[in-house]
Length: 167
Length: 422
Image (tube, rainbow over all chains, first blue to last red; front, side, top):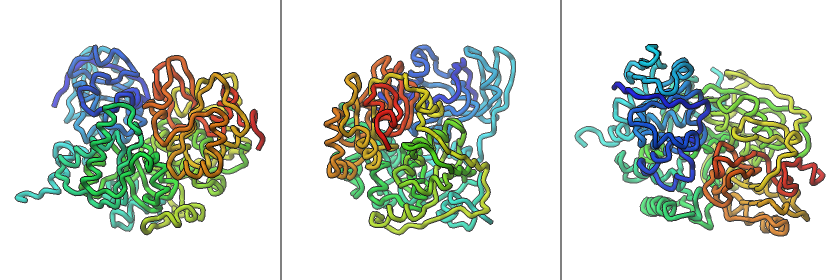
């Protein structure tokens, strides 16, 4: 899968309260959450971004709360993927579990600029900045996470085990 | 091969003699739970994954604590979804308002989470139970929903980092100050994906309440777990509460750590995390000019009886400063009952503090103490991110119950010694 979009750049340690503030956690509806995506980091983000755009961030993206509403808000806003220097661990699991593509690349996070036009091949992890004509190789996705993705997420993975073929 | 306590617990629960950092293991869960914010999503996942009955009703809890007693109609709808699921599944550990406590205060108190357990909760502060010598960590709703079906989950075995504390800190320094100091030293991602292991003479002499506070904030350094080897203090706490058997594990003397930090905390003063990150930590005496509008004492970090006793020691016979709202929230009905019996609630009310039924409310800017633009709070909670307790232009300073109570009296950030002797 290839994703092409404009870069929205954020800093280090973007916490889940910034991604989706707790005042909106009285719902888990993706569209309702999407309207407030990234609100406390950039209040204009949800209104200005276009589907397929890419969030680029520094280290430890998604730190803080375990709220799955954070990746749901990003996916609900139809962000194409998140590239960060690194991810906080609960956010990392949650993103794979709900099928939000994420990739880790510290050089891409450092060098790619706000507004650049970037294309990403999720399978190979190749990140191409069409504005600067530079490419980056993201860290490979761990084998088990690839297996989860191939199964169609954690729900499908568990379903396959609880409901054996023919049963 | 030698192993750390975290490795031993994971090995026991995946039926192997040895596990090594970096390996993926599938483990049997001893306990799993969710709250009113995370349960509705988990319940939907449970159904989508083909779940009919939870893997073991005795090992599952549903706790409406975040926006409960419900703050608005949508939160009431979420709680209703959780309540109906708990009833339909016949879950014995659903805690209704009045019996409900903040999950991480309540579950250890009820003897439902125990030493040697592997525990997941759909809440990041699930790492609190590391204080009991359990491998406990927060997950999202999908992981939790899937685990309710299978009774298992997967982990990457974390590398361990050991923290050894010794020396003689100042009076009024406790678990909150130790963990704030630690996060200040290593940063908010200083233990990302790792197991933090807290040890040394200073830890050994801490009561369980302070140990829970320390383990609770391990996630604020990015850690997967924050574990403390169980000892006689743990044993005294667990005995009489435990609803099932439990096991004490300890790290081998020659276990392999990614790093060992040995810190002499002699003369350490009470610590405060300044806006807007838990690692922006300074000594309280540097902050005496900071005027406050609100002081919050409670939460899964500091809502235990010992925390309220400390607050009462400072508030006894004094008044909250006229321009300050002091909000005190016992973490569970048991904490509340003891606080009543000991006269602590009387002290708080006489001091003109507001006392609430247990809730997470203000900690995450839910309700019960939202800050307006430009307002500033001292809080015994665990996060001070932008907008965490209200408006994006408000500020939260994280501190111990002693500092929060002294600050409430002074109307500015205060050293407990400014107000009371110890």
